[in-house]
Image 1 (cartoon, rainbow, N blue to C red):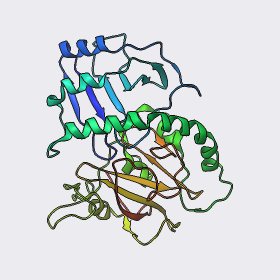
Image 2 (cartoon, rainbow, N blue to C red):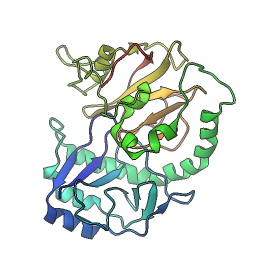
Image 3 (cartoon, rainbow, N blue to C red):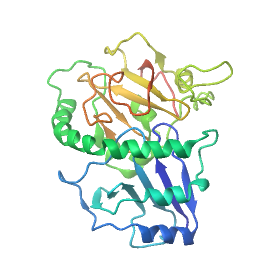
Amino acid sequence: MPVKLILDVFSGRPNPEILLDDKTARELFKKISFGALRKENEKTNPFPSVLGYRGIIIEQTGKLLSADFPKRLHYAHDTVYADGKAAKAEAGLEAFLFDNFKSLKGMKGASGFRREAEELIKRYLDKRRTYIENHRKWYDRAIDDFLRPVKVVCPCSPTADLAAWNTDPNVTGNNNCYNYGTNYRTDTYAQPGEASSQKWNDLSGCNVAAGHISAKMGAVADGLIDVPNKDNKCISPGHLVALVNYPNHDYHWYRKGSNGRWSHKMGGSPATILDDSGNPITDPRTADRGSYTGFCTFMQVIHGHFKIT
């Protein structure tokens, strides 16, 4: 049965993937060694909800080729995650990815992506320990204020209702940063401009040449309101979001919560209240955003006044 190997690397656009034949998939399964999957706890390495490389997803479609493996398994360096559980694993699965890199689909027009992927993986491994330490330091304290703000700063903004996005794997996996930013679940990995027939076709920057459409332009066509001078301030009606750009590759959205801090969701990964270094986000312009170096703009989202699909 078909097995997909998905490089979990983007936030807005769909991730590139390799469809493995049975022989290659069995070779892959032989290379994956992990212990018994157990419910995640405070000692488990947190899922890498970061921008850029987050690991490799192995997905069995249809009848399982191997009953010893979950239908969907997420590998990240020395840990695997599946169905809310985790286990220690042997590191080094990235080598298998690069052995089959020529078969990667979904990266048309992104020249030199192999070198970029290697750099993203190196960056993830270099920062991984800092992210884990800061996640354990900040997460529990910060989430309390998100759910029960000591001071409500932006009364019209949604709380970081992470459970609504992170509990059901189908919701988590089928809604991206655009869904989370607009606080609108479609289960379709919504793309800026698609609902208005103005889907982005150029990710080189926030503003692109005539005849091209950026993620920013697509979002405006969908009904989001560009407010570049809002300067991280609360907005009413609706809520404030921020758009950033990974030049030539991807885009990403943040949303401002009722307590004045920001949260976000990277692609099909769990939503989080922390940045790439594991710190709370007071301003997306100054947060650790990894390769998403271009800050595009702030935008206003008014429910009932936009359409995404």
